[in-house]
Length: 62
Image (cartoon, rainbow, N blue to C red; front, side):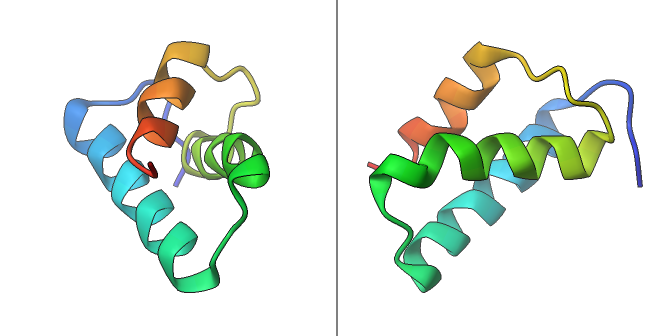
């Protein structure tokens, strides 16, 4: 399901997925940014990801 823009709900779904993946797979912090980027790219189908969105997603992992 590719989306051209993200709603607040979409962003929350991605962040929740990120947090679950970090926790369950014990993803090292050095890989969090890449994981977040891949999740957004997979969800939207676009490679241009807002750095502020990535920062918000990754902040949840700390």
